[in-house]
Length: 422
Image (cartoon, rainbow, N blue to C red; front, side):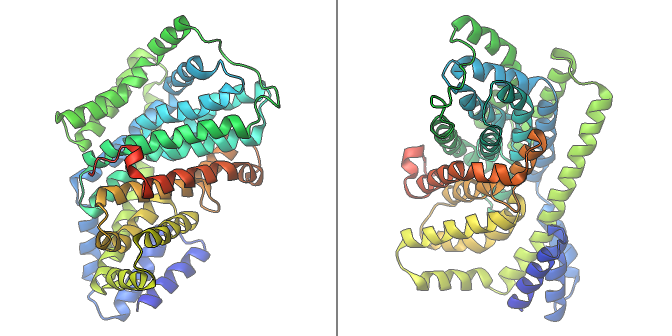
């Protein structure tokens, strides 16, 4: 039955069936063939989304959309430019730094790519940067959006693995910063800033830094309010997401005055549609997870992998390979929901903390956002720059290898990234 289930799932995927329906239809048929009462399906769908922590998902999506559509992203880019734009080729580093700033607001890779790309692409083109290299760097920087808290995938993992969202958020900072540092260093080398004589940006000036900081302070306060409130115990992550929406709306309507009520209504509709897709995937995947658990598939997979090697380093390398390969074909939320119940029992047998594994799987699947065919950040970058996907894909390979290097650090040398043991 397990072979039937996965066979149907991959068949539906090849036929282009949406991921939620591919999961649901294959699981439903397999359960029917095995004689399980189909009432279980609706019960498990409801159980899968019946979690208070999931309230944070639509709220963080909406907060990110509000910030991305307004002037917040432009202010953050200007602030980043005042800090590092003075270097030759510094606009490349600005792309990464702006991505990190916006990651602390949005919780979404695509939103981060869109916000930073929309603000920076015209300037990159004007100053003569290689378009494909610039677009690929912005797409790669977007992966940080789901690693630096708040992070929608971290919330999903916490619900599935029954772990603390706050602990995941607390430990997500340094891996995200490491990704940004790696991309920033590589951007200077790969872009060949000195060989191509890229122009310098804004001259380094304390007055400029202070001025742009004041302009960007309303946006920079968002992660301070969200994460400060969570870690101080003032509110839960779900309540923090609601606070973030209210704050973003107040800033957009009354401070920057860059959005009006009709525009906010459109953003509400778009955020609701995005949330509906994610929730449907979670509901369908909950049925799949229950089915696999009932058939003891995770245990069988764990034993099969452990039979290949007793060396935990080798096993973790295999797990990393599975995560990266899955990210190539399945989008982040779906892959997370499918892989977590299967791989978590295995890593627990290896003695790995579930919070540490949460960081590994989120960082690993974030890389899938820039690996075709399912590479949402590349599609967003291609749409913004009007460049063919093939050109951006070729240019992103060095950045992809750099991010894989950071992932291996998260796996094997977590102490360097400030791992606090959950």
